[in-house]
Amino acid sequence: MVEDNDRIGGLGLAFLLAAGLVEAGTLKLPSQLAASVGRDSWLVPPVLVVACFISLAFFYWLGRRFPEESVFEYSPRLIGRIPAQLLALVLNLYWLLLVGRMLRDFSDTMRLSLVEFTPAEIVCATLLLAAAYLARMGLEPLTRGAFVIVLFTTPLIVLMSLVILVNANFGNLWPILTKGIWPVLKEGFLTSGSAEQLSALFVLVPFLTHPRKTLPAGSLALGTMLVADWLVVTGTQTVFSIPHLAELRIPILPAIQSVELPVMFLERLSSVFIAAWIARAFITIAFTLWLAATGLKLWTGSDTHQVYVFPLLPVIFVIAFLPLTMEAQAVFADFLTIVGFYLQMLLPPLLLLVAAVRGQGKAQGG
Image 1 (spheres, rainbow, N blue to C red):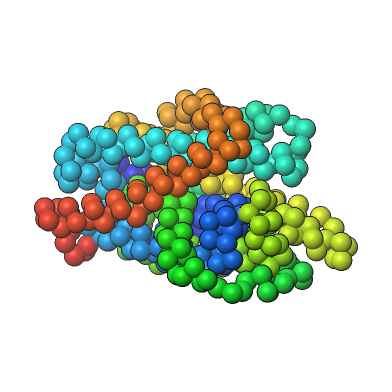
Image 2 (cartoon, one colour; image 1 turned 45 degrees about the vertical axis):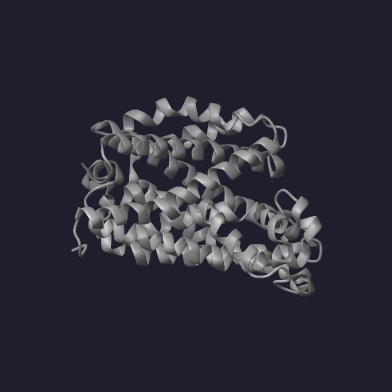
């Protein structure tokens, strides 16, 4: 059952997705791509967005067949009760692990850039409590928050990325495709698993006032993602050599700092970028926490997601600190990217195929 105050429109969906999709790629994506595909890094974001659009299209068609149901409700009719229970378990664990990973990234970034001497536990606990308060209020307040944050932070992120070009060396972008196009295509499709917010469409369709707007709303969010990711990846690559870029943990910050000296009236430009990222990270963590709580509500048949929000906080807190080293944290993030790839790229077309074969749902999505 979806409450009226939890229904959102297509524009609200676009802003919710945009907050998470842009947040995910603006910090670590440049170094990850530099390590995997080298000089062709700047060619990957368009491929990544194409892969995400394919996933979005399958979610859209799946939503057209089941406009009033989430995956927790229609999957038992498609794949049977026991496989559906396993799928529900996987999705709920995935969202819980995602919140933990996001929380750890938030804490590490805050301590690296702004609050170096504040214990990570304090940073995480403070953010979790604030995010839980917003998540408990429901989807519509989350959407209003995402609208304000995305509206103000997107221009800042784009502007900061353009400022990097003051020190650009475009020779770092050439030559291209020296190892062929396959590594770029492979990395673009595999990295689509890091666009975790798309998995929310397993749940969000029945919360939309107009489910048919899933595709245009998602396309708008992906367009924002393309602009931000491509500017950040390309900008950092024009500033640093590929070996240096691959070693940097958050390449965008030193790239911005490299232009702070000649532009003295903006001497803390990197702090502005981090502030924009923090705002997006906060709303993304709150939204993913809502998603985890709502997934449990739908799985167990509870009346409201609110009863799960605060009990989940200790679990998420423990998950955030399970990786003891940066290397372990990177392995954890890579694991979630692989899981996200299977859940977002392979599962929707599989469910759609089963629905078509079994004649389940609305064949025309009417």
